[in-house]
Structures are given as structure tokens and as C-alpha cells.
Image 1 (tube, one colour):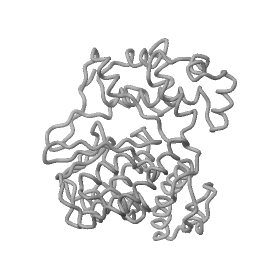
Image 2 (tube, rainbow, N blue to C red):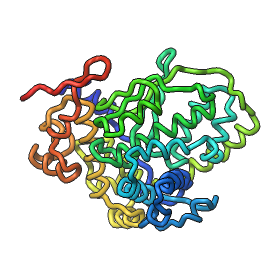
Image 3 (cartoon, rainbow, N blue to C red):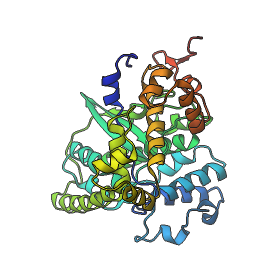
Image 4 (cartoon, rainbow, N blue to C red):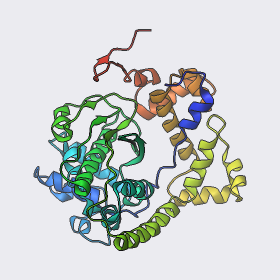
Length: 370
């Protein structure tokens, strides 16, 4: 963990990728369908599960249907409100077999090696509308996979936990489809406190599960064997289609994604809308109109960048609140504290207090009193 004085290095480590657009309907509805199907097992009909999402049950079965992250967010919150099973995200994720992902799934199955499939997944994952961005790091005989929820960054919120649980469960289901039912994680770590249904983690993942960690993800034994279903022609065709879809997803980010990238380049000295418009070679009024057409604004994007950076600084550094406030462009610590309370319902100190010092084996200790 970085010391308070490790500012430049730590800032580079915390650069945030622009999240995909929240409003664009460009993703397949497979994840919503899985959640709706799991709710149906509890006797909750699709109409209730989809309330407010501008979707019908029949649309979930149509290959022409595309959804947005806003619709997914609505269904997640409906599920959290309606479900009698606190582990619904884990169970819904198990429905996400490799064939649920269309051409992306077939590309995973037809790659020549498991290493090639991991590389493919890293490049094209965003085309399927994932709950989390994913980073794979090969560490000798082990692969470490790290998750970052795309639109639910606050680990104190139930929607964040839902996103991580669904992603963990779906990754396990897909990996077993690709490599066989003997595949397993060797460790799971998450950045939130153990939920009441923590025992379901044990039965599903069958490995050590560590809560209140600095990041979310899992580890597994590295496998680089030839894939049983490898087919170079199918893989080339599927990859070409995924490349086209990736272009569509990248274009859908639009002007908002460009503004986001400019903002995160200089945390603490965020340029105003006039400076950004000049950099983008357009008039400020035109930039405002384009952002409005994409359902956002400069002030909303700046607030989101600040919120995400604040959460990351508190989770992953030892910087004091005063330094974080300065890095986020606040005139004093009190203004930062008030803003953070609006975002999360907790003070920065309360939020950071969740990150416990841990003994080997996952036992937690209370942080020292100050």
C-alpha cells in the first residue's frame, strides 16, 4: 500500500477507465434474463422483475433486443427489493453458460489455447455488457483476476455486492464450460463485509473466501493446454464479428467518454468545460448540447470522476483526507467530507474504517483507535 507521499506513482495506478455509457441500448439481455429466471423460481413474475425497465418478458427471448446499463441497474435493484433469497446474484450467475454470450462465447470456445481465450476475453469483454471490468495477471503457475464493477463502485452498496457476486459466479460457470467441471478457483477475495449468506460462497466456490479486501476477484491455477473445441475458422469468424461489436461499443461512449478521459488525466486540477471544449475543438455550447443528448453533463461527469477517485483513494492508499480533498480539487477537507457524505451516506473516515487489517488466513482485526 502506498504511503501518503507516494502521490505520483499512486495517481498513475488509480487512473480510471471511462465506464461504458449508461443509457445506450447496445447490449444483449442475457444477464437480465438470468436474473428474471431466478426470480421466477421464487414465484416473482417477470412483470414485477422488469418494473420500470421498459422491457417485457417476450423481449428477453428475442435476438434483436438490446438493453442499456440503466435497464440492468433497474432490474438489479428490483431483484434486491423483491427476492427472498439474499444469494440471488450468485444463483443467477450460474445460469450464464458460455453459449449465453453469442459470438463472444463461441470465440472463447474455439480459441486454440486457454491462454488465447484469456487474451480474447480481456480485449472483447465489454461487448457483452459485463457487470465488471476484468484484469488478468499471470503470476507463474497462477492467474489472478481482478474485478472492478463498472457502474456500482461503492463497496458499501448492495448493488456493488450484487455485481461482484454475479460476475464471480458467471466466470466460474463459463470457465467450467470451457475447461471442464473440475475447474475451480483457488481463492476468492471481495472488498465488502461478509454478507448473511456467506456460507453460499463456500458451497459454490469451494475455496478460501476473503472479505473486506482491497479489491475483488479470484485466483486459479494457470492452464495453457490446447482447447478441446479449438477451431481456427470458427474463431476467426467470431473474432471478426466481435471486433465490429467492439467498435460499436466504443463509439457509443461518445463525447462523454472523451470528457471523462480528459478529466482523469489531471485529478486535482480538473479543467473547466471551456478548456475541455477548446481541447476537443468545439464551442462550449456545442459540447454542452452533445453531452445533454447523451443524457449527462459536465458537472455530472466531474462529480462521478471525483466520487470514483475518492473511493479508490480511500480503499487503496493511506492518504489522509486533507490530501485526498486536494487531489479532488476541493478547497478544504470539509467540502470533500460533505460531498462524500452525499455520494455514499458515510464520512470518509467511516468508509475507510471498513478496510480492516487482516491476519493470514482471513481473520480480521479492528483498526487501532485514533
